[in-house]
Length: 240
Image (cartoon, rainbow, N blue to C red; front, side, top):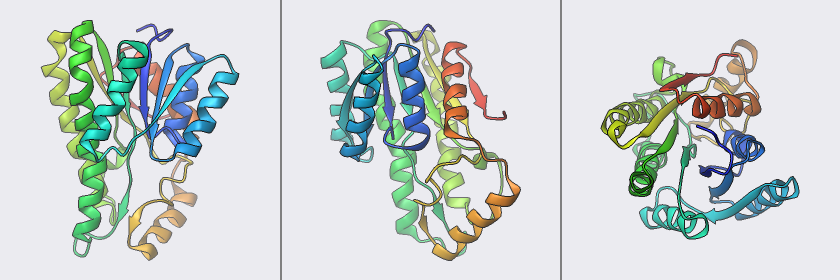
């Protein structure tokens, strides 16, 4: 896919991988729809992209709310007439051993990490079918392929997203809609800091990760995400 002049929705665009991906897409000439719950950060990013000659609108969106997700896609279509790319990036981690993880925490990340991407896919698929093409990128995690104590609940949500992505890839092939799954490693963002659950366990995990696990800058992950779109890959593992 040639990204120039394509309309791309980026969820979780107010920080980290989402913000870096929005910048990378804008540099490639895409028209951006920036979605997140933080309106101030979205506005700042939109102003930055416009100052560089890009085009972007912001839509405050809680990805756990079906009505807000539908409104996000509707605003994209109202402004640009179509949606070519969806980056399902919004997500949250939770720390807790399987034996004692809080059900409320698990439910919260399921709603954001699984229901949210599913709702967004369902909202954009009709528009992409109408256009006869489209790309959906679901941001998973390498932890979905691993067994890390304290991250079972989070890994389970990403494993669920993996299977939704794989199935949708085959279901939408005849519609010429590509579904890509991206698997970042540990990334230098506030993602871990903003996780919920066992505080002591979260601190230990961050301490251990800081010394023993490769940490990628979000810009490197964003470049791989854009590469996966231009090359129309099925999966993209981040391994600089």
